[in-house]
Amino acid sequence: MLDSFTLLQSAVSKRTIRDQITDRLAGMIQSGLLRAGDALPGERELATQLDVSRETVRGAIQALAARRLVEVAQGARSRVLPAAHWIARPAPMLRYTTQEVHAARLALEVAAARAAASNASEALRARLRRLVERQGSALDDPATFHICGTEFHAAVQEASANRLIAALLAEVSGQSSELSHRALEAPGAMRKSWLDHKRIATAIEAGDPDAAAAAMRQHLDRLGKAAKRANEKSAAA
Image (cartoon, rainbow, N blue to C red):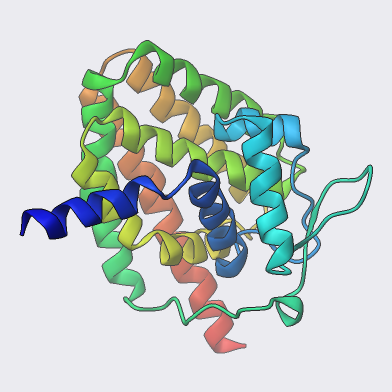
C-alpha cells in the first residue's frame, strides 16, 4: 500500500504548472467559454492573470497550438480555432444535469466564499482585487473577461484553504464552464457577472463571511437562471 501511495504522489508531482494551465485553458475552449476567433491575452497579460511566469504561459500556448486548439501568429494575439481543427475532440461534457451542477456549485462555492472571508491571505485578497479590476476593463474582450472570471473563482477556492472543496469543484469544472458561457451570452450579462465578482471580493476583503456567502449565492443564482433561460430558448428554436 505504501509503495502504491508513493507512486501516486510521484505521478502527481510530475504534473507541471504548465500542464495545469494548458488543461485549464483547453477546458475553457472545449466547453465553449472561449469561442472560435476569440483572441487570447498577450503573454505578459496572461501570465499576470494566471499568476505564473511568461515562460509557463508560452509553454502552455505552444501545447494548445500543438493540439490545434489555438493558432499562434507572430506579432499578434493567439486565437481560438474552430472545433473542426482540433486534433483530439473532447468527450461529451454533459455528465450531470444542469440542476445537479447548479446545486453542487451552490453548496461548494458558497461555502468556499464564506471560508475565504475568514482565511484568505493578504496576497490572495490582492489577487482577487486585481482580477476584478482587470475583468472590469475587459467587458469588450470576451477571452480576457472569461479567463479573469475563471481565475477569480479559482482564487476564491484557494482562499478558502479547503483543498477538498477545490478538488470537488474540479469534478464539475468542465460543465460549469459550459453553463457559464450560455449564461453570459445575454446582453449586459457580462457586466452583471463582473459586478457580482466585485461584491464577492469586497466582502472577502472586509472579512465578512455572511456577506461573502450571500454575494456568491446571488452570483450563482443569476448564472443558473440565465443558463436555464438560454437552454429553454435553444430547445424552442
